[in-house]
Image (cartoon, rainbow, N blue to C red; front, side):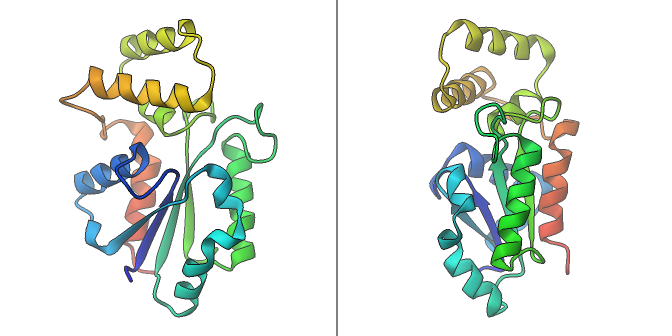
Length: 189
């Protein structure tokens, strides 16, 4: 078993969430071989105690040193309990405490840093120049796609196709909190 776990939305296959995290770890020179990536499926699964059975057993056996939960903020207007960055952080802290994992865990809530709502794709969008950002936002508004899943897919695909040679601006200040969280995974307790 690997000493570090990163829990993220989606599955273990190449998804936007784990692809971004892996690329950022490579950019930072962090050892991917020490990390077990676990896709939790939907955000709601982060709040189901039964999804953590293996992690709890491994933590009790001192087989896991650290856990990072990467979870979307979404929007408090759509989910008063789990939506928005503050609510997501609060509920994840309660869940990790309930599971007894709070001492080895940290939470990164993916969103637009200015609005504190959104998802990983919103964080990515926040790191591109204003003219490109305005163009993408304009397309999303006039497209009449108003479901989270479709919005995320369109946003991610527009970004990947529009910027194939430089997919992420990891030097942007909005990536600093995620960089810090990743560095902490490799810092001795």
